[in-house]
Length: 472
Image (cartoon, rainbow, N blue to C red):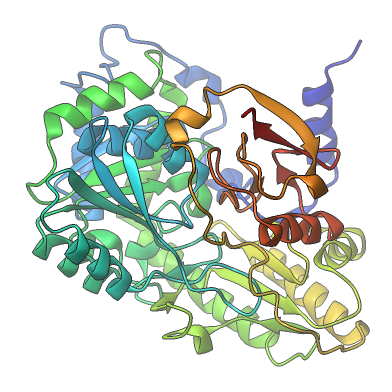
């Protein structure tokens, strides 16, 4: 019968591909002990309890908060999803309102469903490549002013950095939010490494965000699902937060994850300066070497102060393709001819993730592959992909919470215009819903989905050119 998943992963491991994708450990064993099975404990004497820590877990979290500059830090063992769910449930009761950046990850909208909170959306700017840029602080200010007498409005949630490493102006956003006495939640899943080198953007905690969620496994050498929730300041109800973390997380948390997170924290504390002092120059050298090509154009610091982007994370290598091929073609070419895999491709872009676990040999392979492809591809000017991966405004006809409990019918995507969406429609990656359950499907949305499918982008919620609509 075989073991399909196990066999598939075994085959991938045997191919010796160099990974410029998650997880951030890049399969570099230097950051791990050999026998992880020895750390697979449960709650017995001496191991403490994640949901009521008084011993070693509490001590580990205390050391974590000191390293990251938080007032409190909590391990979350089901990724940033658990931290985001708990955050929204902490600050919002059913019927409360929350300002939500519309480029947030799917898990934020799941938090809206579970909490019964009512979203007020602010939309990001869009880069010419179709990526979501930053959130304009003035858009948040306008919504806070408009709802300044509404006691139901509790918080603001933004994603910074984005999957592609684009950061909003968190300093100004935090000042605006706090001036209105609201709570700022920052999904910093892709920014766990910011604290460890001044070549990176300023961490959200340094801008006094109230709750910050980080996925260590995305950009640090940690196992998948290793995440941390930090708080700062006195605005968050810690008792309620602990309660919600216990509700959304398993009662049998992985001690392998928690132990390796604690060990990584120690490594960063003791060797972080040396590790990042070696990594950043290699990264900068590669960025310089792959810059200046017409066909594969590296998106860099020129984006700062455009499209709502206040800063960029240089660990993300994002290339815009100007050639008669799409991103999937280049992705497969790099894999076949240069044996390295990237995070994801879009119609006309490539996204690669680097981390401190990357090696000189790996960077050399990346440089050779990008330079080779850039020289081989014929240049072609193309129009901008203005909304390729970014959601467009659509009327919410039924609340998100109510919509997912409605009966649905599958119909042809091309005939869905005007109907109410009954499913999350999400290009994955990056995991930002184009249309949500309860929203009106517009011609623009259908064109956007069709365009992505044509260019081999996986769109969750679309099944053989059909989409679920709510029965009316």
